[in-house]
Image 1 (tube, rainbow, N blue to C red):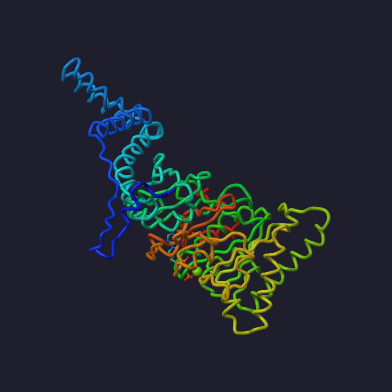
Image 2: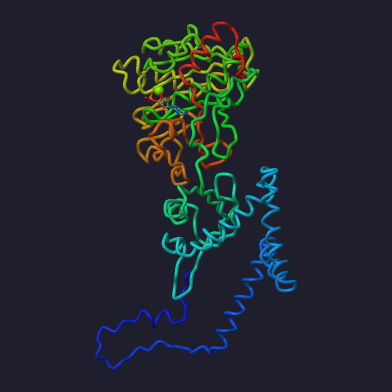
Length: 479
Ligand SMILES: Nc1ncnc2c1ncn2[C@@H]1O[C@H](COP(=O)(O)OP(=O)(O)OP(=O)(O)O)[C@@H](O)[C@H]1O
Ligand SMILES: [Mg+2]
C-alpha cells in the first residue's frame, strides 16, 4: 500500500562527503502547466458530480434559488429561499417527530459531515496515525457517511487495506478530541468497515427514577433502566448469573433493587423467590420484609442460605434429569434468585477459612449448575480482581459500573472492552451524574453498551416492602 513512489530513492540519499565528485541529482520531470490545469479541473468537475450524486436534495436546495434568482430576478430567488426555510420550520413545529425522522437528522448529518468530519478528516487521520502522508500523497481511510441520531453521530469508515479494528480502538481518544466529541466507540459494521459513534450529548446524564412495578408476573428479562439509545435496559436473570462490579458509591444498589422491583409480581404470584445475602448489612436490610426468612447477614447465615440454595438446585437436578433440560418457573419450582451484595466480604475478606471455602464452593456450584434448573445468582462487588473473586468467570453476564482503574474494565467485561469504548473508569464519581451508569456486553454483540439503572431510593424500597406485607402489589398509581 505504502510502496515507494518514483523519486523517493533520490530524496533519501545523503552524501556524507560534501566534496565528493559524485553528485546525486533526483530526476525531475517538469509537468506542463496545461496538464496540471486539466487534472485540477477534472478533479473539480468529478467532485461536483459526486456531490450532486451523493446529496441531490441538498444540492438542489442550494442551486434552485440561484437559478431562479438568475432567470426571474432577485425577489423570486429570495422568495424561494424563504420558502425553503419556512416549510421545514413549519413542519418541525407542527410534527417534530416526523420532521426529525424524515428530514431533521439527515440535514444535521449533512451539516456535521461537511463541517466537522470532512473538514477535520485529513489532519485527524494523519496526526492520529490512522492515515499516512507519503511523498506528497495522502493515504487516508475513506469517510463513507454520517448518520445522526438524537444523541450521537454515527460515522461509517472504510479501513485502509491491512488495517485492523484494534488500530482504531487504540485511538478512540485521539478521534474523540479530533472531532470535538466526549468519547468515541468503535463497532465493526462489516468486513473492512467500521462504525464510529461520537456522542453529541449524554442521554443518561439525568438520574432515572424507579421504574413502575410491572403488572405482569414474569421472570423474563427485567426492565431495570435505560440504554444510551433510549431503549429499555432489560436484564436477563433467569437462565444466567450476573456479576455487578463497581467502586463504592457506583450504584450497585440501584441495579440490585431495580431487579428485585421488576421481579416482585412474579414473587407475589409464586413464580420467583428472592433470597438475600447482605453481609454488609447496609443494602438489602432496607427491604428485609420482602425476603421473609430467606435473608442472611452473618457469615454463618449467608453460608447456610447458599448451601440451602445448592440443596434446592441438586434436588431439582435429580428430578429433572432425563426429563427436561431447561427450567420453566412454576409455583412448585419457582425461579430462585440468590442476591449477594458485597460478595467479597464472604469470599476474600472472610477471616474464617472454613466459612470462606464453603461460600466459594457453594457459589461455584450454583453458578456452574444452577441456570438450567432455575437457580440464578446476582452478585455485587467492588473489586473485580481474580484474587478477590476467584470464580469471576463463572458469571456469564457482567455489568461494569464506575470502576477505579482502567485495567479493571477488561477484567469485568472481557478483553478489549475498554478499547471498544467501555470507559467505566471515566464515569463521573458525582452520584447525580454517574451513579447507576454502567457498561454491559449483550450476548448478541461484542460491543459494550452504555446504560443507566433506575434509582430505587429508600422510600421506594420501604413502599415496596409495605405493599408486599399488605399484599397490595403492584403499588397503586405506579403500575
Ligand atoms: N441509579 C442511580 N441514579 C442516580 N443516583 C444513584 C443511582 N444509584 C445510586 N445513586 C446514588 O449514589 C449513592 C450510592 O449508591 P449505592 O449505595 O447504590 O452505591 P454502591 O455501589 O452500592 O456503594 P457501596 O459499595 O458503598 O455500597 C446513593 O445513595 C444515591 O444517592
Ligand atoms: Mg452497596
